[in-house]
Every structure is written in C-alpha cells, then in structure tokens.
Image 1 (tube, rainbow, N blue to C red):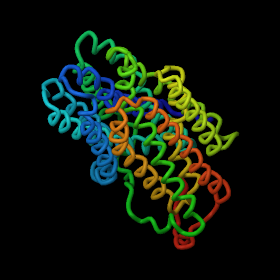
Image 2: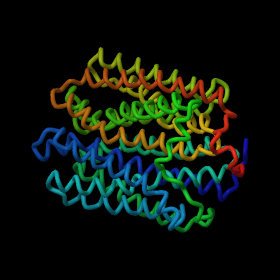
Image 3: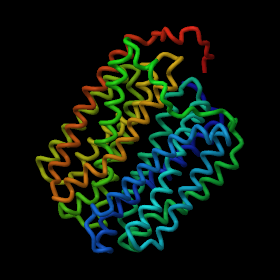
Image 4: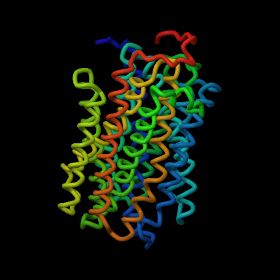
Length: 404
C-alpha cells in the first residue's frame, strides 16, 4: 500500500470535501421537489426543465474544465468552481417562479460540472501508484454528498422550509473553496484534457465493438441512476411518504452506492473490474424489479440498487483505462464520461413521462431494465480490455509517452 504524505492526505480530504458539497448541492433540488411543488401549487414534473438545465450546465462545465485548467491551473479551477456553485445557489432564497429556478440551477450546474475533472486529476497525482483508487475515492465524494443531503434535508425542510435545502450547500461551499485556495500542495498548472472529437483511434477494428459498447453502457448506467436520483423523493410522496421523509430515499441509494463503490474498489483486483461491475449491476436490477413488484420505495432495496448503479458509474473511467492503450487513453476516458453526462440531461424527461401519470412501478422497471442492459454492454469492453491490455494503436504506435 502506498503511503500518502501529510500534504497528500490533506489534499485528498479537501478534494473529497469539494465533491461532497457538489453532491449535496446536486441532491438539493430532487429532495426539495415535492415541497416546492406543494408550495407553488404545481405538479413536480413542472420543474423538469430545472432538472434538465442543471444537468446541461453540469455537462457544459465538464466540457469546459480542460480549457479553464490550462488557463488557471487545476487547483484554481477546483476552488473557483466550488465558490461559483455556492454563490450561484444563494439566489434560490428569493426565486418565486419556475423560470427563475431554471436560470439559477443552470448557472449552478456549470460550477458543479467544472469541479470533477480537475479534482480527479489532482487526486491521481497525489497517489501516483494508485491513480484509479484515488480517482474512485474522490468521485465517491459525490455519493457521500447525496447521502448527507438525504439525511439532513428532510428535517431542514420540515423546520425551515424547502429553501433551506439550498442554503446549506451554498454556505458550506464558501469555506471549502477558501481552504482549497490556501492549500499549497499541488502544481496548479498541469492541464486536464477535456473530451474532443478525435474518435477514429478509438474506433479502429480491434477496439470498435468494445468502444461502442462502453459508451452505450455509460449512457445507460447514468440514465438509470439519474432517473432515480431526479425523481425518487417525488415517487416516495406519490407512494404515501411525507415531503419531509421523502429525501431518505436519496440517502438510501447514495449510502448503498458509497458502500458499493468501496467494495468494487477493494475486490476488483481479484475478481476483475469488469466482472465486479457486471455482477453489481445485475443485483441492482433485481432490487429495482422487486421494488416495482412491491410498488413501494423500500429503503433497503434502494440501497442495493444504489450500490450497483453508483459503483457502475464510478467504475466507468477505470474500465476505460483498462481498455484503451496509453496513446489514446485520455481521449477514451473523456469520451466515455461525456456519453454518461449526456444521459443525465435526458433522464429527467424520461422520468417525468411516467411521473406525470404516477406510474411508479413502470419507472422502477425501466431503471431495472437499463441496469441489465448496462451489465450486458459493459461485459464486452471488460473482456476486450483484459485481452488487449497491451494493445497498441497502429496509427499512434510511434508516439512516446512517459509513465505516470
């Protein structure tokens, strides 16, 4: 086990804190949705555009992170992004219309998306011999934030109203951003490469099928997870829960996902990353289908579903690293992540179609079916990655890259 120096441990803690606040802010709108709808006298699906624009802003932030990192440096991007989404969330205290909510969440989403690529890159540098493990730990900060939000938002909404769910991450983000800005432990000028359109090396004959399956699997994993994350609290209210208790569904799924991600990180060396993710996704699908049969949001089953879906989402980058040779690895990881992020824009609409007619069981069946499809798709790049771990891309074989 690689020992991490004190400055590295401090840095990892700060990066995880940034992603925890990111996850907390991301969970605020889904958790508060039933209470907002009751307060404004609208159906929860009337805020579908707000969910979509949050996701769209996140995708744009993710795609723009590379350019900003080359200009400012990674550490500066992280703390400015945390500060940005914190300050952008504060106007929620005065919004009184759907369009205002949409504008605020779109701007907030950009900040949320800017954080992750730079934070993962720094985490990998802090633990160069365990880059994948460090990246997974940082990414799981999002699940930890979702878990925390699911636990505290219900009591906060009951006591202070739904706006309190947004004020908490906004206020917490400010000291976290200041702490990261003052941390001296990283070279802030190492660039992070954002996804680009150089897909030809990834679609050569030896990689074509595996690449297409990996990208489709990324899309379906994120689609299943994002449908549930967007609508679980509203589904719980339809099933009879109070708006104050409904956020516990997010906590259950995020708590399971946090545990599942840590399990996947721990056993992947023995069982193989691909096999681990496929098995966990099949188990998640079974849990969702049982939940659909019961027609109730059973928290233990949601935790099992979260374990598979969140582990699957967190493991996509590691699966891409295993699949692609070094010359095209950065491109492959970036494109895989981009396909997953695009699914988060589509998910609120897919869920809203069923939510508008209170088809809760159908929504669970759709999410379960997507989990099964994801397992089948990801099995292909998992097998190809194991067989081609030393494959070189002919067109780029003359390029020389340094080992990290």
